[in-house]
Length: 152
Image (cartoon, rainbow, N blue to C red; front, side, top):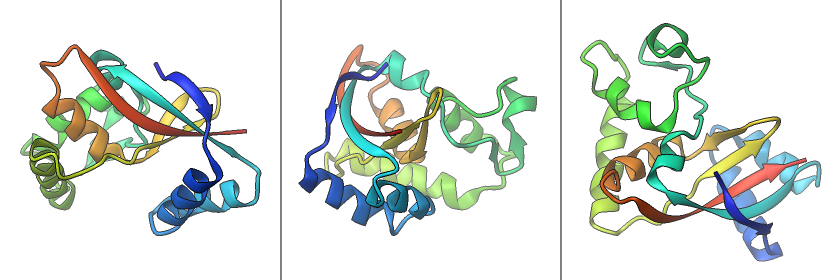
């Protein structure tokens, strides 16, 4: 659940558009730039709520979400287990996950997570970051994770 949702400032919008333009979801930046979506900012305040958030991942290294967990996409809390599964062939994402865990543990990374609100909230950018954050904070009941939400 995303709490305290407010409209992003123009500075936050410009920075997020610039950031997203260099990612695989560059098209989201264009929708925000064109005003077809607006950018909101909120917080996820519990590890449980973060874990229940849906990711964009339906296939991680050949392990399909519908077959593995019965959902069309993996939840944040499921990503680590799939990446660590020896059957997962996505070595690059596994390595990136480990790097993110190390950076979050060292407090040297400010998470940048963007969800798209389109009937349901799905993380479109920052999926591995969200999974790593969830793993690092799994024993913390309360968290304070800022997220962006793009919505119509």
